[in-house]
Every structure is written in C-alpha cells, then in structure tokens.
Length: 300
Image 1 (cartoon, helix red, strand yellow):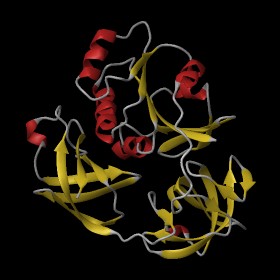
Image 2 (image 1 turned 90 degrees about the horizontal axis):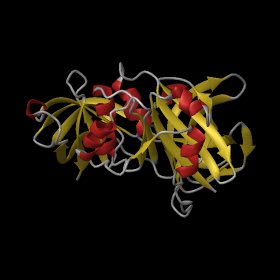
Image 3 (image 1 turned 60 degrees about the vertical axis):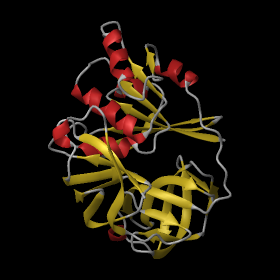
Image 4 (image 1 turned 30 degrees about the vertical axis):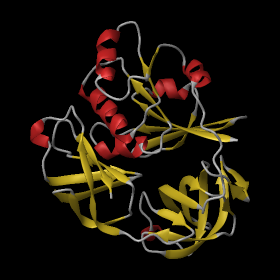
C-alpha cells in the first residue's frame, strides 16, 4: 500500500471534492482512504498573513496543487517556495479566464516547467496523479509531529507521519528535542486502532511519559535521540528571481519540516536564537520583504 501527500493552495472547494477534513489549525489537513493507499492533503489556512503556514503545509508534499486562476504575488511566492523545496511534480488549476500563456512563461522561469496546467474536476486530477512507490521499512523508525494535545483519560496524543521504518504499538522511542524516552501506547489511522504503521502512514499516537509541554511542531520520535544545533553552516543559494538587495547577510528565518525559527546569517553561517533540530537543508525567509521566500541553505 502506498501513501500520497499533497499540498493545495487556495482551492478548498476543489479539495473537498476528494477528501474530508481531519485536522484544523494554521494548516488544514484533509484525508481520503483508497484501495491503493491513503491520501493526505495540506492547505495553508493562515497564508498569506502567516508565511510559516505555507512552508509547514508544503514541506512534506509529494505533489502540489496550486490555484493559478489569479496571477498575483502570492501565486509567485508559492511557486518560488515549491522551486526551492524541489517540489517538481504539480498541477496548476485554471479556468477559462486564466492567462495561460503568461502562466506558462512564469513556470518557465523556474524549475517547475513540468507542472501540468489543469482544468477539470478534482477526481479527474486524482486519477492522473502519480502515487509514490511503497517505501522500505528496513530503516530505523522515525516519526515527525505536526499536531499535539492532551486528551482526558488518554493522556498526550500526537499527530504525525512515519518518515522511515515501521512503527509498532508499545515501541520505545526518543522524543527530540529533549531526548526523553517515551512509549507508544496506541496507534490510530483514520480513527481505527492498529498494532503497527508502515512508512508514509499518517498516525495518531497516544504516548507514555510525554507531556504536551515537551513537544513542538517538528518534534521527532526516533530510535536514536537527535541532538539540536545552535548554528547552521552550509551553501547559501538565493533564488534567481530574488532582488539583489535581499541577497545579503542579516536577520533570516529558517523553515522546513515544520520548523520556523529566527537567526542571523553571516558568510554562510546562521546563528540561531534558539537550538533547533538538524535538517539537510532549510528554506530562508525574510518575513518583511517581498518576496518573503528568498533562498535556501544546504547544510555541510
């Protein structure tokens, strides 16, 4: 069984035609169960006011669906973020009023020229989408957390995705940051109890020895504890469409894998205000500039 994750920008009615809401916050998460696997759709409900709503929603997607009916700066910001995140498979939804030639020109200026310009129903689109192949479960177990809360008589509950390995009921893992040893008391998928969950699965977990105060969006469960970092060193790449006055050192926010945190960049090193979990790369955000997404840093 495969699992498909999609990002959708400003097309809620389109998504409601293929999935139902599961989680509501600054990122809306919709789900659909099919014979071939589970579909999860992320929508940035507080974008454009909150830029992290978009970066969080897009970070885990296999396929992007972006509303191209209105050609404005927010469409451009979505495409810029998708380009920097390497989201090479996607669909731009249009209608009869869309300036398609201008849209094609915009796509050609990025690495997203293979995005499909699409006019049709959401079910037609789902039937076209390429689902990822089933991933191996031979790796060590890791789970990334996107929501968490306390449930009376149950305790601490988290929602997230199995990124690698196979998750099992009663498995003992580390919660990072913090390196606290926890136990998975129960596993649910689509409100049904399971004894295990394969890689790619969206899960709801009840945890033993974890408090809500121990968790943040982007926290990890893993077989090996993860050390946090206070600075990031690497290759800084500004997007070619970003103006020259934004290609400089100074205050910057790093985003990706549900992280959004402030630091100060100087000559390829970003000193963070607070320690964060390590990633292979981070998107660079300047929330008071235009565009706000400016580049990325690939960690050494």
